[in-house]
Length: 178
Image 1 (cartoon, rainbow, N blue to C red):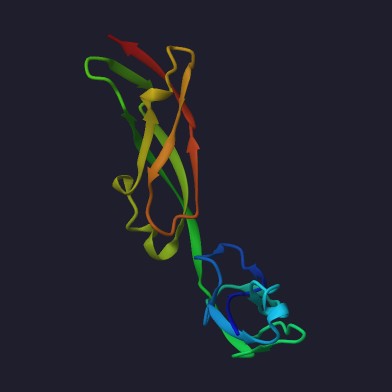
Image 2 (image 1 turned 180 degrees about the vertical axis):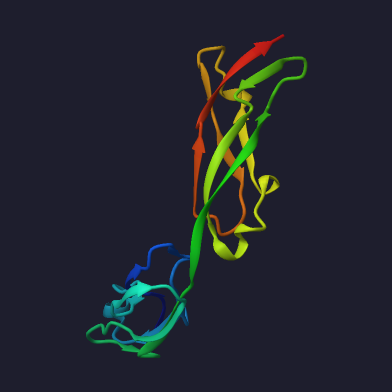
């Protein structure tokens, strides 16, 4: 016998404005299979039959059959699949840019000093998300002896559940004063 992870197969179409909060979960996430050793040695996972759903706007919990594998038996024939879905919206914020790895005694001015972010956020937390929930950085070490004119921006901190962040601008100019 052998313990295998279960991979849920789904084809889900979501209603506009809704997104999946995290990957589809199988419960249990593993099953035991029994069969001839030669077969067991060539099997690395179990999967569900594909679950189809259209116009999804609520979370789903369904029992789904495992896809049969010829010559082996499963400890369970069905598993629960769980899909968490939420309504999302966009929020725009102006976030200050923090310069990291700046040497002592060197002054650097960034142009602009702020970047506008457009974040896709679950509606249930959108009202509580603010500027302090994000950290936007530029790295002084990327200034390779003045060979680069712009510094790329990186999102170092964001709230859990944020799906997408678009920065405007994505990079900034800088001026070094010694």
